[in-house]
Image 1 (cartoon, rainbow, N blue to C red):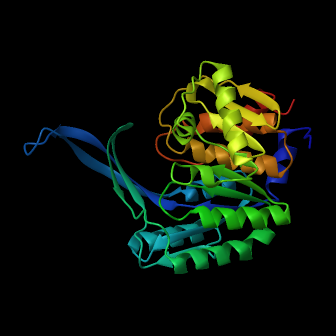
Image 2: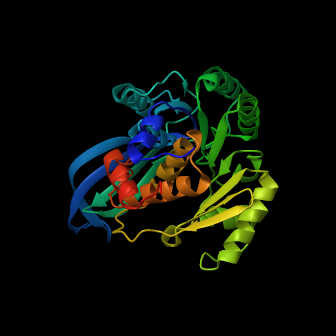
Image 3: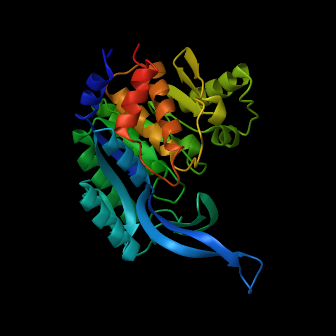
Length: 331
């Protein structure tokens, strides 16, 4: 589908409902400044100035989708703990449906706590459960997915290897989505890498592509990237494969067509969450019928924009619209 202008494109985004399946988490930040070296050990002492908690992981994908104007519908699991309570309350505050999110007494809510001095991250402390779902949890999660899927326009798998996504969840969801004619897009991790058979779009980064196939890929050599992507596409029987290549941009293969979209020169503050933004834009763009090339160009812009901010933040819609216009993405 062709769009005559950016406003028309984002108007179509606003009509979408996007099912987001994956590992949700809480991103916690301690912002401060280094005041001295500790007398107890040779480490800096950070004097706290403020603390902040944000929705993270697959929930950051939901925030990005909401920022684009669409409606995210998360399907996930949190712990029956204080951070799980914070997570559900924050979803409600943001106006994001929580009826697909389960609470489990067998799991901790994943929390990534970052300690920053100025714009520099000093330390990260993770609290998480990454074990596989129990049989009961899997049954309940699949029931939620199948209940919510028919009213959605596209599915995002946001996999952080924390155990919420497994081969059965993938197979059952992809099969049902295919039956309903709903696209499936994937931001993978290592554990389930080769389980995403028959999806619409598979989007690893360069490291994940190398490790998933156990091959060498040189991002400076377009033939090397193309060969790796083609091998992966054939193994997964995916309609499209897109690889993010950091400073080299993004590469996408849609059936026989390949496109390398160069990165835009930016001041990079923090790459955290850029992949979440890229997959969110791709999901919405493909759901409204954009070509693979134009969708990838828009997602590439969006991923670069969020890297200019410290911490995990969703895309700013106005900034993306302005840059899409300036860069003539739709032309």
